[in-house]
Length: 403
Image 1 (tube, rainbow, N blue to C red):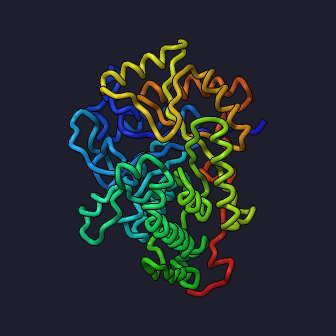
Image 2: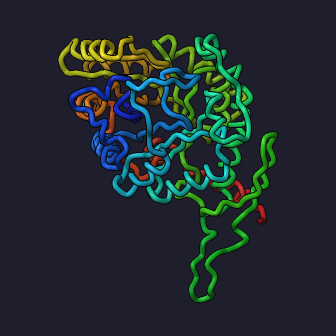
Image 3: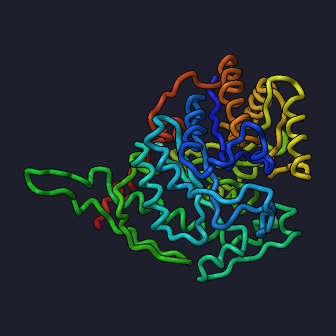
């Protein structure tokens, strides 16, 4: 049996807005490296493929598309790239995948940040490029404006995608420019030959000369080629336009089905987008489904806990992804059933931390192992290796380009 891939998405004290009030929560520590180290080390003990870390260019909000003035939810976070770089030497096998905004951040800075993380982690870096969904974020930079989503837009993922289509087009260019910058140094460009005094083979460092509709990038990168060649690019996709972004430039796509038939439909839509971009078979894309999970060993306890959190928050918690409440064994049943749709794995969003993370690592993982559906030891040292993705050669080395 082919093993499932499992990841967890970490954000604050968990995905439920009232999770910070739980007795075992550590809200006073979420701006410390130790807090995040404890979470990621727990995920690594559970042999998970990778963790993702959320980030935005504005304070967290309850609304997807605009700021709010709520003071009863967690507000404030650490920079995801800097945080994962700090975690890199504390971990050894698990992948580290920060989220970064590509609408207001230069591709060159994104490229060297993720490349540096790959070097710091010895080949365990990934990247989740994200466009801005809030027009208010533009005011932090003062260089441009972006579309303002309406309350009607946010009721339908296709309406959101249509309104933000221009930003997704720009994101295509960002991903392409970043990937070219990662390739701008060939693997053996650094010589370090003390006998001849040559540190670098200049013929193996290339200008990328990217010219897009929105920007141009000369290159080369200031950071030598990452250990993985190309760190793993992941894209969260809810609708046709983000499916296209994932099909064109991602190694992993996160989809958000609400049911098994919905998973079939979403994977079909993504596959159609992939065919339009004619990705070669040598460039596989792993498909993960996102689920928010509340887990307890005792049947019914997870649903009761979520209801208590909902009452504390004054609203029923919902999400773009399916919200699952149940036991680890029941979740294992669902994951193995949904795997039949063609999914390669799942990115689980713990409803409350640390409770639901440890329920994944100490409840779900052993259950899947008993069923022969999950690894019992790490089988690779890099994130690409864990995901079964090939290490690509530099496009400039293949082409024999001269810098």
